[in-house]
Length: 112
Length: 114
Image 1 (cartoon, rainbow over the protein chains, first blue to last red):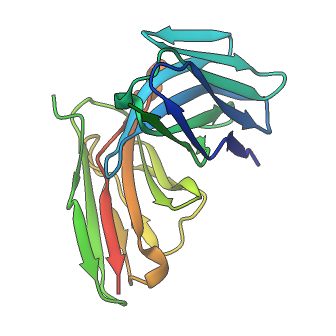
Image 2: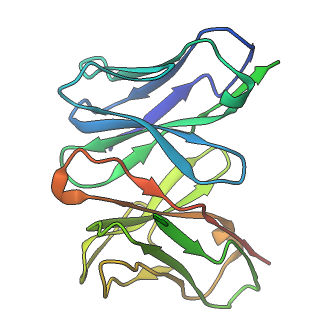
């Protein structure tokens, strides 16, 4: 059974810092991995999707990497801003079906 | 473009009551799913559907029913509400046919069972 973990559970950084969020998964037979952002009381917003054949994806100040063999993905946020404060979740889609398994999330606070 | 729409946004039920959470998408997505989100546990899959007329169980299906009579709608039914079903429920959809397509989420339904 696929299990997804995220470290750290919470992170607080001053504005302007670069930071890395981590996601680990136990079964490397994944179809893709998706990073989401969730604001308090809101749904999930897709940030980046990395296909199993890709090593990284970039969107603006965000860069996500994928190392399938080690079961790891990282989300790099450059020059963090207070508006980046949210919970960040990763989810993996396995090769056997259509379903995603989610990690518990990292709660990020960027202090002005 | 509305995306994924969930209703109601909030609901309070008494133990034993039944209700239906509505989910509709206007993107012609084949794949739809329901998750529940509980503190510290991430999102867990309840039921999913790969197309109209086809549904299957996820990780935590007990106490819930679904049906998929149209591509657009995927309602979730609580048969006899229990306090353990207090949670935030999210509906999601994606374009299954194109493979590597992201999931789109609704804003959630916050459900409290007293």
